[in-house]
Amino acid sequence: MKITAPFDTLVEVDAIIQAGADELYCGVNTAEWKKRMVFPNARHMFYGNLNSFEELGSALRKARDKGVTVYLCLNDYLSDGAFQLAVNDISRAISLGVDGFIISDINLIPYIKKLDNLPKIVLSSLTPCFNYAALKFYKKLGVDRVVLPPAQLSLREIERLSAEAKEIKIDLEVFINNANCKNINGYCLFHSLDYKPFLKDYYRCRYDLILATLKKMVSLFPEWLKHRIGRILWSSRRIFKLPCRRAYSIEVFKKSSGCYVNDKKIKTVESEGHFSSHACILCSVYYFIKFGIAAGKICGRGSLTRDKIKDIKFMDLFMKSIKNGVISETNLSEYGRRYYSSIYGLNCHNKFCFHISVGKNGVF
Image (cartoon, rainbow, N blue to C red; front, top):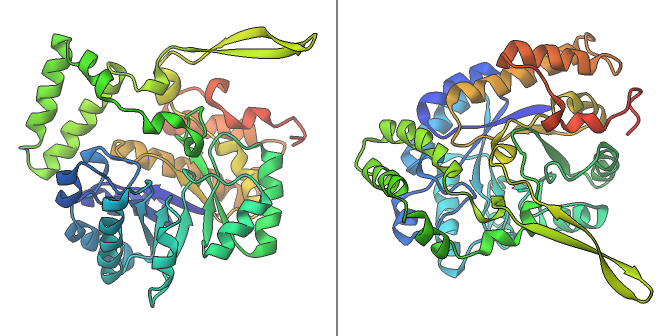
């Protein structure tokens, strides 16, 4: 299984490859996209993407020298005006030698398939795939690899999908670290909300106004400083919560005597920490390798370089221990906790552990 890792600056490419990444992925938000206030991928922040295709070309040359594959993210749903810009980006990326594209909008697939060098097409989890029928549909369209939705599939379901994917010869990719949203991204209606009403409330606070001014000033900084400052300001998401991270409740009804009555109320997760804390699926890598999953994806565009390197080293160390026979089905959780502590300097805990659903004997 390959390690697929993100990058968003040129200076971190060599370090990420050296840490053990087999594949890289990135986004490019050019001045043309920013001018129109639309974006080609799911990471809109300026410090989570390259800023030009010149930077992408340099990154591709570095990766090519090390024999590492690079994918360009175009994983957002594209409006009419944005679609043509995305098509232009595909042509430019192909001319530079990009290996493939991570997409959500399947309307891009016929265009990509017309290209002579047939770059690989990876279907983002933002277009979710949960069953064999969907796998066959995407395979017929021309998709080479499907990224399974994070945190919404059990190991049993992933095992079944892996067997079905082998049958029709399509690769699967799973998230290993940092994919911790509780919602199914592809079905989440919060993506289409108008944020302006929320922003009006946001800027009434003097502190938030200062923060907004700082963000505006960042646009005047040189590129290397933009990324550093931008990552610091990323913590501002704790002040202004996205709509899906605000407090609301869900009512559950059940049928009784021919009518529906209120059964219970469920409160959503109100703490931003539940969304931003480190989510780990590493112990399940043992099973993913057994199932024949093609790649394990580390989420983290916009994160600090040192954090990306830790995630890669964590996964690389675990996979090497499996290969060398050190880790088995009976001791994988023990080694997972040990490696987690040694890499991150923290104790492994169950709160954000995907693997907790696995029984003592690997029953799931």
